[in-house]
Length: 486
Image (cartoon, rainbow, N blue to C red; front, side, top):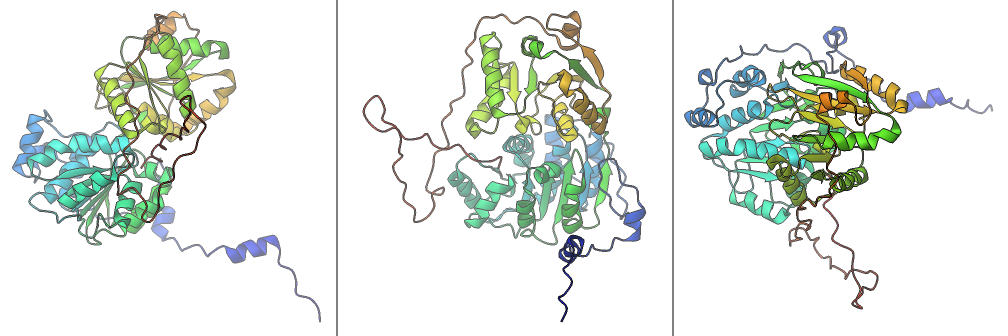
């Protein structure tokens, strides 16, 4: 009897690969938009609103808008609010700084006003990818929530989970959360999502990029199936596609702002520098009058650059995921208040950081991903203001940077510079640093207190082991910093 024919590699691959689902004809024929997400045509949206007064919102919200000096809706707000206030699922694209927070926040608060949440059972949920963005959303919405007597709480990693559980137990109609911490609270029984009527995903593409998609999916499966869902982002791509198709029902799509590379109030510059000149060029830009955010690749590079700038007399501060949340909050406050004039950061600050009148962003290390470039640049030229994005490029980086900028839709002005050039000063305000070392009062680096809610049940804490200290005892390792962005 002849032996059976051994399957080839291609045959085995074909057996393992599940059949691809059939795609409706209208999806095959519709051309994909710039950032890759295609949706079949749905029910058309309502006409945009030219003023807040014509929208169906509670009077206290309108009065608070006037108190805050918000007189007319931004394009993303005027386009989406008529549909979101009517209860439609909304898919909105607006660049960073375009007013997305109020676009979804006003609708969420208006539709929740007058309701009261039971303990541990919120009525509205905003999911964001980072702690910084959660804090920004919370700060922005708090006065409006108070105006309609809604309780709002933030749920993020790096801070006491016990206090957050207590806030949920007291009752909160609106929760702003990062996916990891909210999932922890749900699993521990401190929060239930079955009464959530309105759910917002802010910066959904970044949540997908950071690997939060499984957690986001688990959370969305627990909210009311008949509730309203809104998804807002500066970019919409195929990573978001699964969330949109699974959880949004007949969404109305609004894309009112150009990509960040096309914003007319933002200038883009590529400064070609020699390797031996990069450090001095960076220091001169940092010493300019006014604030600047500088992006580098790694946490270690952030700390190293901050030490060098402080030694040169520049008031610089570090922001990255290795810092405790309290430290990060205080660093941002130092930067916003002007106590620190330079914020050196990793991509943790590429989204969710808003600083008024910030006119310069510098990519000390060029990003590899075009989306990272656009979001880094989005820290400036916000809300109609002007600003510049400067990228320092070494000779061996030119080809990769050119390719990345083309993918980002950016046509920068390219200039070769040296540290003392007048053109460098004209483009960035660069000047020679004082050279007198400064000591910036650092935020307290204490780790969040470990409370009973953080401890694993049935597990005893062992005494730390370590080398003998000068006093003769054994010194344990310091508490481990909070993990992850959520």
